[in-house]
Image 1: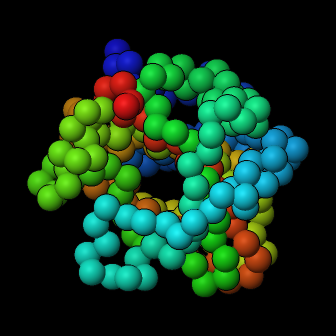
Image 2 (image 1 turned 90 degrees about the vertical axis):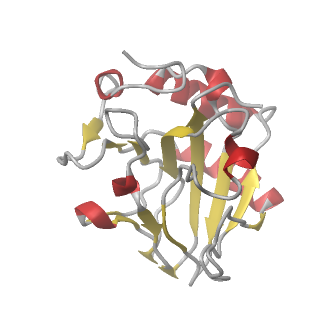
Length: 210
């Protein structure tokens, strides 16, 4: 039985085209052509309009840990509403538990070094980021375009790298089946070697957002 801020593999696999990665270390799934190209183009335009340098809760003193650009996309935008509807149809997660949709842009040489999406309970800023809505449960990430070279998402623990494809969705549970945080979800947004990479990320929380 899932909590309001989570979904299940069984629920996700009902959607046509969803596949589960063959590993027991983490729950990782993908779906090619989850978004149509036209919607991807609309979301890219929104990212380009409002992008700013990305930040991170704890970069461990590395100024080059996350070098991409990012933006929060307005829930009032028709393209964002379309995206949210598609995600709800896929995962069935109570919308109140979702963070605002975030867009990211990676130019040549930009990356997001190996990290997990959840917040460490012993971290100095845990209360700041998780005091109201709790920790992150599921991550849903969508590539909005193909990249000429580089830009893959590497899961080091299972030695798997996913390459960007227009409209391809990648999602994972940030926790183990027993509810504990899963360090095997460590992933690296690898450097773009040629072209520009655009990504949408939607995170869900244990409690309602805000």
